[in-house]
Amino acid sequence: MTGDATALAEAIRSGRLTASEAMTASLGAAASRSDLGALCHVDADLGQRAAAAADAERSADPQRFANRPFCGVPTLAKDLGGPFAGLPVVAGSRLFSRDKTDTPDSDLAKRFRAAGLLPFGLTTAPEFGLALASEPAIGPLARNPLDPTRTPGGSSGGAAAAVAAGIVAIAHATDAGGSIRVPAACCGLVGLKPSRGVMPAGPAFGNHLGGIASELCVSRSVRDSASLLSAVASNTRGPFADVSLAEPKDGVLKIGILPETGSDFPTAPERSAAVEAAGKLLETSGHRLVPAVWSEVATMVAASARLFSDIVCTNLADLSETDGIDFSLAEPLTQAFAKRGRGLSAAAFWRSQTAGVLVSRNLWRLFDRIDVLLAPMLAKAPPPIGSFPSDHDDTELHLRRMTALAPLATLANISGFPALTMPFGADKDGLPLPIQMVAPLGADRLLLSLASALERDGRWQHPFPIAGLPS
Image: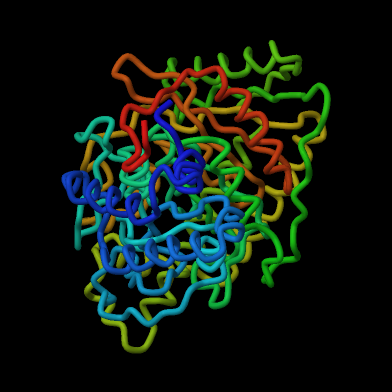
């Protein structure tokens, strides 16, 4: 293992390096790895000022500084969600301008900073998060550091590329249809989509998307994701009632194991084998495996994909009718999704939403007989750059392409349940073999506990060191 954000924080806390030195290293790595297109905006002055303030706090109030779990650790915000003050989000689109820098911190951004994280830039995302790749027409084009001919995923692809490459040790990410988990899976990282209602989304709720969106991070270790979740979760102040994060269950767990994803979008054998291997390790740890089959989830998966599409379309339809926005500047695919949204009847949307409610109910029924569902995250390897073009208007083709890569991605978003991905081995090309675990609402820490046990088996090693982390 080449370290994580917790290790970097400890190095800063102990005085082996300063926050300013860590920031200088991250800025240098951002410049030297610009070929990856992971960052779409860098503000070196902002980062250096934040690091200097952190170093000043360490001198003036060392206890307060030390109590921050990620004291002095450089990080990056995504160009979607947030926002973080001083970092002008444009959602990968030419519809907006980076000249607007006066947007205040979101509630989540405040908590990131309180945890000690120091944001200095924005990571590349596809326009309005519409793809499982991160190649906005305005640029840059994000590449996977494990194989630059391939995508790092989307829509948090720039974040995942930056963390996998070691530019930063941890980065903000968002997930409305797999957008934390797919990039994490592509780049060999840990990605947790928290339970609905656990993460703050205010005060503007601009990334709400009917409740399917959630924000947290992509990280190099389970402990980093667990630590950040603890630091920023709960007391969300709407729009949902706070979900209590339960402590992990003791004793034997029933692990539902689903290595397949159906005949329409089948999972490659080596990726199914990784799921089975993870299940066997958990069984060796004393848990019980419960076989599951695709027919048990197929209807839920289809309803989730449909509602995800309808929410995205209606959201963009609304944006397209917003005063002061020249929507003709949007990419052709974005315009096509908005057109589809404008043509969607209220009755059709209501039917889709009702089916989505039943997804949650039926998934709860599945969890009457299991504690956790273990399944594939990606059906195949990260595809080549250009696999999700946006210069066309075929929305159905685009949705099929996304489902073919990550057939189970939207199930957790529509149900609201937590889901976690992590690497569990590598394929013959050295690319990660990710698995996904889903648990009932509020069982985020159970997922993290199981992921920690799988991580200890050491089946994945990060090839790139973290900028600034002492060896």
